[in-house]
Image (cartoon, rainbow, N blue to C red):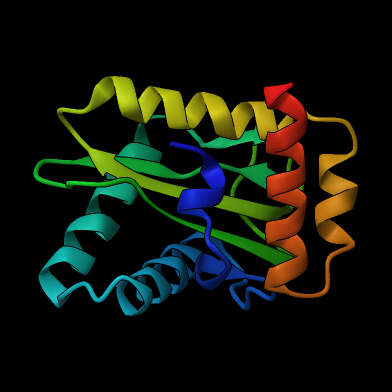
Length: 157
């Protein structure tokens, strides 16, 4: 599986509205629930799992970039939402910097290998040259998706 299969055009939010991490998690999970036709129980389970994971250790993995993720029992496939905040989100980062790019992943608790592989792919994507500036220069979901697929294609070579 590749990130472009998870962060499909319809799962990209080019203009996040949240001001802080709590609002952000709600915004992301509501969007995911709508896009993936999840019921309120699944939505609530994902929200709790994200918050529980975040309490262990911050998921800010690079300046201005967060990778909140959660593992749930019975989650048959990897789900994800990628969002961009133009204003920045108070994420409680150790460096105090706001987060502008958020890549949320949700996977099965018992599919550890798959989950770690997706986190690795996200880290590789984030680590590609000029990732942050390319993403912040995008105006819509289609442009963001194109950047993701271009980077993934280059990394396969």
